[in-house]
Length: 359
Image (cartoon, rainbow, N blue to C red; front, side, top):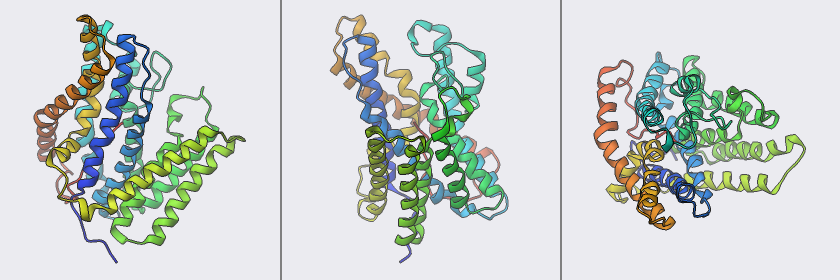
């Protein structure tokens, strides 16, 4: 039975906030440990928030832009909407990080001034930072490097009038398989050879399922993706417990989004509005929390109260409040102005849900 058309997915919006909050918690534990020197451990589980974000991005692309396939200039509408949604706030956050490096270099521990890296960061292109990691000036921007890669692939699919899910599946699958042969010393441009890109495909498959409700097609696609995730680690001739844990994590993330999407008829309209609002603000929360959260442990250290638990709690509260304000008074107004004035943005009537690129 075909699914009824939807323009809102409250469950997905809420999941965005949960994903961003998981990342914030992980980073808050890291900042507290690093800045207060208390020897506490970083809570790494929150890193799964990035996985959730990637699946959501694939899902939203199918919901909001799938109808552009085969249409004249569809790629222009898609590309412009993505640029308007992502670029302004990322550039603002990157500029804030750059200003901090110039004015208060002692406050930044994992970045340094480098003209080449800075330019590539603004262009969403991969580069190595001062510590040798493939990471832009704004550290969390590494996820946007992958987001923009996915959007570029999706845009090309629309440009050549190919069916997005098949075109993206071919490119993303090749990139995932390529990860088995990529060495640590390979150029930064090869960073896209990573099985994490299959999360985008998972989201696209679930998005397609919301439209055709074909369980057979859903099972076939997910079976194909899971098979890739299971086989790729074997290509280098070994399989470890870490690889098995990774597969379990992939399955859990895919199952989570599928469950939330399937539950939409029951949870839609019942989720508290503040949760939906923070889902809208999740992009600002993700981008700006690394610039704000470290201030908390720094201040606690200065006043002689180096409490790690207090630092973590206050960091989460402060960045959540700051993100709400940034979204309300900066992100939303900028986005609306650009949407109203730039070409190839408003003509296509898409679903109201917009992907929060993350990290």
